[in-house]
Length: 154
Image (cartoon, helix red, strand yellow):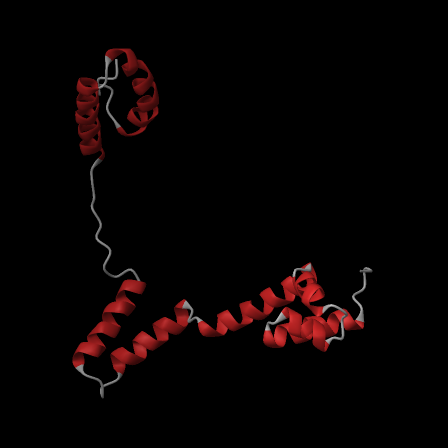
């Protein structure tokens, strides 16, 4: 096929996008041997790109984005004609989407050093001595940042 698609090829592409049947589209575009040409033309990059673009547009309308979901949950929460359980669920889902229910655990750096020291002592008790050098080498940067100097890597 030349660099510029032929009118017949563009006709095939249009018909294929309408009903998704390559053989039928090739027949309607008046190709000889539509059983062979249809699948061959359907695998052409121009046809594939057009099909993906069409599916992308269809999917973008079919799937609600974050803003649309948040508007829906807000409307549900504020709708006084709904049962309270439905309004509360809308409120809960809206809150979750906004990160209102994230649990945070704060650990002081001195606690991290103590925990790392305990982890190192447990590892030393279960890792054979011949492998401990390599493990200590891998742990050294972590201990340097978070741990204390007495973590027991040596």
